[in-house]
Length: 484
Image (tube, rainbow, N blue to C red; front, side, top):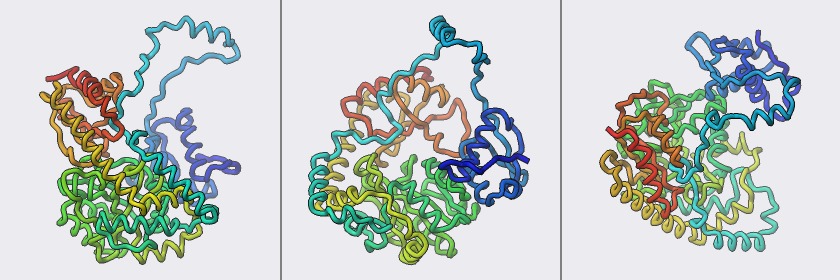
């Protein structure tokens, strides 16, 4: 029986320490590929820990690809191929010999260094010039001078009342939501709030996420040791029949603007989703409305929360997109009955956002600066998008590319006709200083085919307007390497 000493785990939790032990043995070859791991129950008994400790360790290992599971057979070690390093006796190798070896190594044997990233079309960035630093600094100074006592007082677990009230007013004006400040829970990023929801709703529930979708959400759920299922989508959003087939309890969706497809769930499907949630007491919908401020085609549809009469929708949003990617302030809106449970069971948790940020952001919203900032950024991003689309349409890419979902927030889909495999396309772009991703990367299961009409997810939030022409030129060079 596989065993480890858990007497000295340091600062790690038990499950994280166990995960590291197993991972180390896999990487060192102590647990070779195909090795069957002990069942969770017998392993937990042998180690003297709870079943959930082993379950969480296995879930984290599986999410990172170190192990895999087979139905009714158990968990097995994956085939991890590591780069081989020639064996050298440390006792016989002096520092001088190492130095000589470095000097005589042929340049041809060294891997070519990749150029720095010129344009990142994958990750979210905030251009420093777009953030209202002077206004934020002024409000922060005013907060420090007028609220010295409040700044030194620990906030309620749900966040300070001023910020929650300001968020309520904002949601009423821009999303038509009628909520009370008490329903708003502030947290340092959506990752933290997902973890709080798992504690609130239960680890025994089945959580469903969209496929394709933002893969980090799935990883957060799996790292928290819950059963996370992937549910397929169609042109109207997440499929109800798949939710039922997966026997899901919680559906985590983004109906107002799906990433990365840009799909907007129509009202008819929204009511179907509410009907699905109302069918069982254990069912809830987590509505992720992260990017609703930046749809350019039309006014966004009402939120699910605003048409929910059964208290089945948990609304979530963040300021990382609308204000700055480094401001880790997010919030969720709980139905009244879940709010009571939250304070009864989880009120001992401390709020994770500093008072300085909460009071400053509350004043930023309340004094109208946030609305002005959103309007300014919406115009800025629209101008940026139009310039990028115009440059693509004027380039040789126009003969082999089509553009879709250009009004779907801060990204669009660029479909490319090329003989290149997707891996080759991404690698070519990286050699040209571009970071790009393909739509298929957001699917859990996908087929790779050389004849596939590739779709690139072009996130332009961190691209400078003056860099667009050069970025498109580099993209053209990357794609036209193997045109049909």
